[in-house]
Image (tube, rainbow, N blue to C red; front, side, top):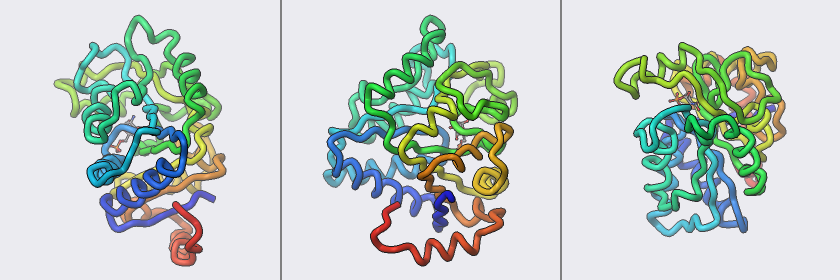
Length: 260
Ligand code: GLP
């Protein structure tokens, strides 16, 4: 079973997850964090930045993003490399070379998947992968229909995803058509998955991911195949979970020695 943690709001979620990451980073000689873009993990990054401001040392931290658009010009403000520079590297004081994104350049994209997989292995694998969830149940940019065993590769974005993301660009036409994304198989290799979802718009996808059948039609349902998953949701995103009373009971009875 995935562990379900129901929180008041994103701020509480951010503090909970950031404190866990901080504890793990301090205890380890190296720690590899998988980053997600989108609004859901922002509170975690803000809470981590607050911990850095009061002395958290991230010298042993390396980060790998889930995905990147294909074909945006170097330095394009909406490339995930730039987004993560603004939201993660700069506020956390991480040198840019410790935050990896797949190579979405037109010249490098053909071998980007293989090189990214190799870089993750070289780093020792991802210890904790942060995940958001699309309203259609996508994780990373693994759209419905993605192989549950897939590795990092080029994907075509769903039109709905392009429309959802058009708000970051001047027009829909400027939203890239392709991306490079960690595969579902890549994500499942991480040692711990932490999926964050907030608001009623995510309720159906969260319920299907946690309790529905495991199916490529809802890529996030693959988390059920992972031995260690924590799903952090607010009440609105938890609203359609059938076994919510059991999850509340589990949360209330959680032994003190169990971390996140
Ligand atoms: C994009 C990202 C996903 C993210 C999703 C939801 O498609 N590639 O990683 O989970 O958006 O974003 P948000 O958290 O803003 O709802």
